Image 1: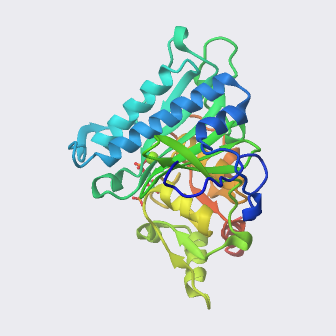
Image 2: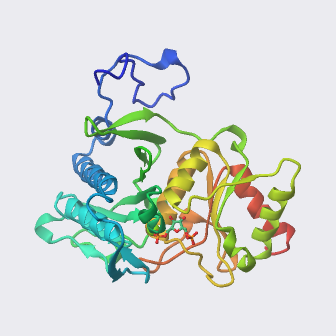
Length: 357
Ligand code: AHM
Ligand code: MG
């Protein structure tokens, strides 16, 4: 990293970085590749995560070149949930499927863009199952606003050939979850169960994700007072969601509204600054909009690992922790209320205040 100043690099071990004195000159290259190798102790999982990071880099490159390479616009197809596919949706999906089916570590893939699960042929299959949204935030693609990839990794339970039951499991079974944001910089945030949340930024000149922050935690006390949701849907919200957003807006120190409309960006900001991100159920969409396996679960997993909370709010007649849902189909949806404990708990309390639970 010549030209980037002194080679004082944060440690990548499990110690939180609290001050400059925690920084040591351990290596000029604290890359995601090294982090994965050091963290897993499991070569097959490391190979899988290498394939994922390769696909993120290739998708980042495609996003960067989209205007020049005429990759903006529609592909002319609709995806598994009936949304129009953009050219970049299709390309990024091909990138992820290619990387994951050929790495030798995956048995089944579930992609937002494919109606059915993809079973990797036996001669190339491995132990893991991956659910992913290759390019989330499609509505932002054509105006060059940040988008992202979201993924969750499980180990298959079936002894022989994988089945769909290997992916229809609660979010508590996730081994590793992450997202990659294609924004002003490309940033990959990853969490191995029990090992906190780590941030890596793509250094384009090196072609590697470089570790920039260990053990990311939401700000103490909940951080900035920010709510993030599509308020255009508010007339269809239930009384609790309407009530709490109203209270936040009317308080002495009102909350700010921030909404990119790309879940990765809105969740990333929530983790770093504080506040809450909501895509609740409403009268028109009883299950909300976001998909359990590759949007709700991985983001809830990361949020909890970062010291936040993740709930569905009121869903199917009861308040549910998001990671406890047991999906029955691969593209099913769930309401999402994720962020700092202060604000998620305030939402749940509002259900009690309104007499809804
Ligand atoms: P997508 O998977 O079709 O891109 O939809 C998911 C996205 C999220 O990233 C975002 O938070 C949400 O949809 C925005 O929805 P809306 O446009 O209804 O506000
Ligand atoms: Mg999506």
